[in-house]
Length: 220
Image (cartoon, rainbow, N blue to C red):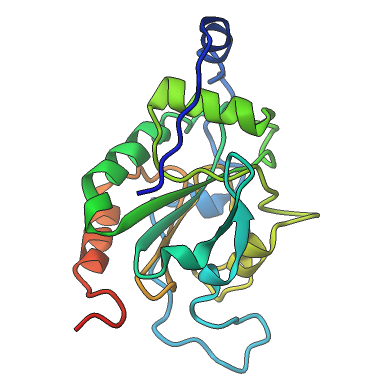
């Protein structure tokens, strides 16, 4: 299990404890106002120029929150929940539910991958060090967190460009912070959940547990 910890100073804690602001909780896009999108089609048109290989998620390498390169292929065989996160969003409290979900299912091969991003009303302005401190101090986050990236618009990271390029209803840029992509053990995105869907929503949890019931690739 990958974890991260931080050395906390009382002064830093006092400053960052109030980071969650009163920014509007409403997503700017109707995409993520939905409770849940449907699962991706079982088979996409292989001739479409926007469709990459099915396990494209695992083809990327990104820096973790401490700046260490992390090959997502190291998560092969795990069920993943990819989430673009922010510290000053009306949905920031979902960090607590993400951590709860991670702790409950990690032993079964589940990982939450958090990707801080600042594209929605500047709600993640902090440095990687500040983000790490905020998450560990306020939400005791131990699931894998990554360095801040761009998830929409100019400079979008290739991972999120690939996510956006997928067919509906999986594809498209995130509509707001805390958009969630559920990835099966083969590295295929199979469902997308909007910001208003709690990580502990029964439909999301049911889909997650069904994926965890599947054997790891190559298992006898």
